[in-house]
Image 1 (cartoon, rainbow, N blue to C red):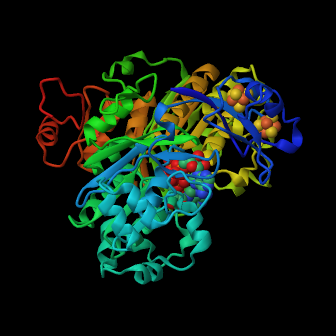
Image 2: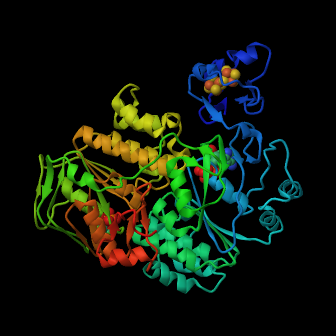
Length: 606
Ligand code: ADP
Ligand code: ADP
Ligand code: SF4
Ligand code: SF4
């Protein structure tokens, strides 16, 4: 490993500082050149080959724009693409294989989208050369004799056409207008739009305008558009955001059904239970977010995900994380619940215009994180608003310390407009709770430091990416002093590690404040990781909902999975939940013994 300085261009403000990063650099002071101002951008550039990683510029910069990273020795080798001088560098590439679904797993900012754009022909790789355009002839010459050569030459010759579902779907209704039916008919090149509408359950929304769709409906619509293209390759960048568990499984099955042995299929997904279910092989991207990303060799799906969680890639002999990620292997924590009563409710009936919600009696304990699982539009938000006193139930009562409880709420979909007038992240957080900005306070440590958002404080909300916006929305929700925290799908657009960081912070803040957190989540691994207990919602979305009592994780999951007809086991090494293949040995066994959520003993067959 070599240590070098890297600069965050968004954070650097050369017109507001003394540029001491340059004047104090010891290499510069002794006649060398490790860092200098780029006359075009007026911002510093760092010469990685010369910089000695001494940390002096890091300490001198008043805006924390520079940090030191450890780069692998081969940092200058095997560069496939670089975004400008000192820009992000992608090392390595993988070869999509016909008839196999390849899953892509890795931290945000390590180049997954860049890879998909290269492999779909949207971005011509520059092989690290930022000075001039590189031709396809040069690119193919570089790859001659390697596995990916054939694939790339077909991309260069436009023999492979790729249909690509982009990651951030929220921008689509702003750019494309029309009803679902019109747009699907127009997009359909395979004559399958009616079949796919049926299989994805889009019938009810056919005549709805795109701008009126919920997040899940929009996601399914875009997946339908992509699959209806007559191409040889289908790439899906995070197809599961905003979908509930049933829909995630449905989408995973449909991607397989609607693609054939002649197609190249690549899926990026951070819901590891779904990635595991959908993929044949997995490639891991690792590195330093925003600085460089390295593509691993392909692994079989179980091994690849387990290696990623363990933080060690044996084929590369590479440690990618200091600590392994483990999910609990036992369900013992059910017995260790905090016991102090926080709020309770009798059987409830809530009626809103045309929507009815029935709730079984239950209670929440102090410091408890309750997971909610169920489809969208089933009354989850209505339930929490009823608990808080914002909606009066038609029947039943809520028992709580005061008439109205303060709820801090993060809705499922966030747009910059949600935060009102244009402002910076810092201004937003200051409006909610100044303490979160005081370095040294526990709230600052838990939220700003752990979420890694100090670099975003100066940025305008409207400039943030989907993942950054999600983190800020969660930070804003948790910064508020409230009695109940309701977070609807906090995992959307976050990677596996970010999901776990957010989960731990939610848990710790809820315990420290002796409040309650209610978390609507569709990522089963995350629910398993964070929830003390679960409430299952069933019914007919937008018509009638039914909320069961809070139950232990295993008992609630059993009920929920039985309704879905799906069985899940825990991986004996990592404790992560794995969806059993339909009609496999374990699927049949677990259904027979009525254990839909199950920890197999080591003697059970894989
Ligand atoms: P991922 O999909 O894994 O989150 P991306 O491929 O989107 O990663 O991005 C990797 C890095 O490259 C990020 O740090 C991003 O800021 C940078 N990047 C992406 N696109 C561009 C671009 N067009 N110009 C400059 N930098 C970019
Ligand atoms: P979830 O949180 O599970 O997605 P919600 O509780 O937001 O579901 O909504 C459940 C149903 O109640 C939806 O059909 C929604 O349109 C309807 N609904 C929500 N709030 C109101 C309201 N104030 N008036 C009428 N209907 C509502
Ligand atoms: Fe110069 Fe040291 Fe900064 Fe490198 S880390 S640019 S050598 S001050
Ligand atoms: Fe100024 Fe920091 Fe940018 Fe250097 S890196 S020019 S010290 S803001």
